Amino acid sequence: MAFVQPLQSNPRPGGRGLPAIGFLLLVQVAIELAVLGYDLDRSGVNYLPAALGVPVDARYWVPAQVGFTGYDTALVLTALVLAFGAVNGRRWARPGAVAVLAVNGYVSATTLITVLLLNESILRLDIVDLLLTATLPVDVVLALVVALIAAVGRERSAPDLSPFPSPYGPAPFAPAPGAWGSPPQPAPPTWYWPPQPPAGTPGAGYGFPPPPPAPPVQPPGPPSV
Image (cartoon, rainbow, N blue to C red):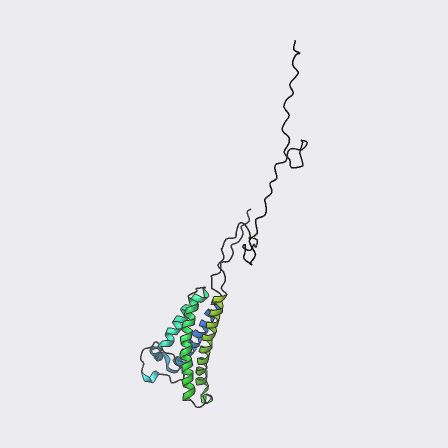
C-alpha cells in the first residue's frame, strides 16, 4: 500500500488578522442592532421607515442621543459583507473594513462632541441615554483597533506556500558569492577515480589501470643453413 503524503496548507498571502477584523465588524453590527431594537421597542414597526432612511411621521420618531437611521442600515449591510469576506480570507475586506469603520468612527466622534457640548454634565442623562451615548466612544475604539490590526497584518503576512511538497527536499543554505562582502570562491576540484581492475590483476587496489598485455612469444625458427 503506497503512502500518500498529505497536502500542506496554503495560507493566503496577507491574510493575517482577517478573522479578528471579521469579529470586530460583527461587534459593530451587534451595537447597531441593539440601537435599532431600542427604537423598535419605543415606536414599534412604525419606526422601520425611519430605519431605512424614509421620512416618517414625527409621532414615531424616538427622541434619544443616538438613533438608527438609513445611514446605520447601510453600515450594517456593508459590515456584514466585509465580515463575511474577512472570515473567508478575502484580502479586499481589510481596506474595506478600515475605510467603513473610519468613517463611522469620525461620525461617532463628532456626535459625541456635540452631545458633550449640549449637556452640562453627561452624568445627568438617564440610564438609557447614557448607554446609547456609550456606543459612540466604542465606535471610535473599534475603528482604531481595526486600523491597527490591518496595518500589522499587512506587514507580517504569511508567504504563499505551494500545496505540493518538494520532491527534492529542502535545499541547503548557501549564501550567494560576495553576499557578505567576501570575493567569490572558486569551485572545489572534482576528482576523477578511474574504474578499478578486477581483483588479482596487476594494479588492482591502487587506482591504476592494468598494464597492457604482453605480445605473444614467437617460437624460434629453424636454424638457417
